[in-house]
Structures are given as C-alpha cells and as structure tokens.
Image 1 (cartoon, rainbow, N blue to C red):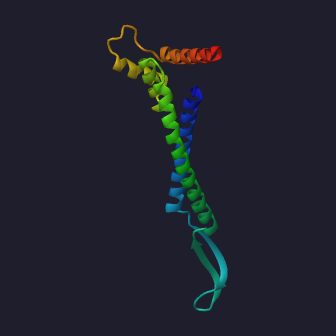
Image 2 (image 1 turned 180 degrees about the horizontal axis):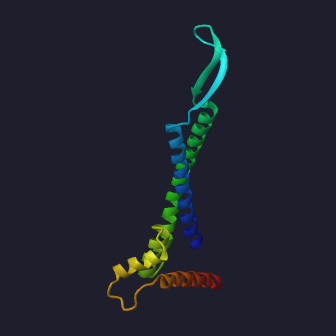
Image 3 (image 1 turned 180 degrees about the vertical axis):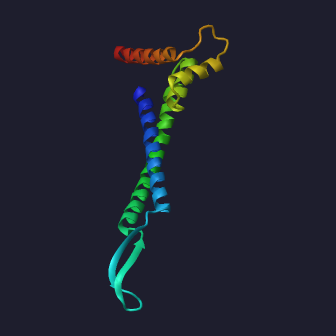
Length: 157
C-alpha cells in the first residue's frame, strides 16, 4: 500500500459527491417536470372543428430521466460499497505510519478532506503548547517528505 490508496480514496469521495448531485438534479426534474403545451386543430366535444390546446408532460423525456436516475442510484450504491473498502485500506495505511503526529495530519487531510490550512489550525488547537506553530506549508512539507522517504526505503529493499 502507498499514497495511491489515499489519493484514490479522495477521488472516490468526489465521484460520489458528483453522483449525488446528479441524482438530486434528476429528482428535482422528476418532482416538478416541465409542462409543455401545443395547439392543434381538431374536433371538439361539441363536434365543431377548431384549435384545441393540449398540455402535458413530455413522456419520453420523463421516462429517460427516470431511467437515468435509477442507473445513477445503482452506480452510487456500488461506489459507496467500494468507498467503504477503500476507507478501510486508507485507515490501515495511515495506522501503519510510525509517528502519531503524521497519522493525525494524514487523517485530517486524506480522510476528513480538510485543506492544509485547516489541518494546520486543527493541529495547533490539538497541540497548543507546541513551541513552533503548525502552518499549511509545514504540514504539506511533512507530507511530501514522508512519501519521499517511503519511496527511497522501498528502492533499497
């Protein structure tokens, strides 16, 4: 396992967010579909010929949107199950990191999805007595150094 699991986890979370937004957009359409109207010439109930206004929901478009929503729902279920497995793998990888401080940073950044600025603020609130305060650059560099060291350790093995 390596950094790819963490990156893949973050990407999968974004993909699931995108699917949820698409489903919400389709739900909104299906709850309040656009009503179309047209005027045709034909005979009325009183057998006179003339213009008749026809209104309704465009059925083919409505059915396509329903089918798309169902496909997205099934895809979302699959992706959520896959994300659960990736979460487990990412947590295991983070737990294998020897330094507690790095584990906390990685959980905040990769699992919780915080920015490096937010990670730095959280770390400062967790460790208020630390002499040198955490910064976004400081946290990012620790992340970079960790993966550089992990990569060089594998090449030596």
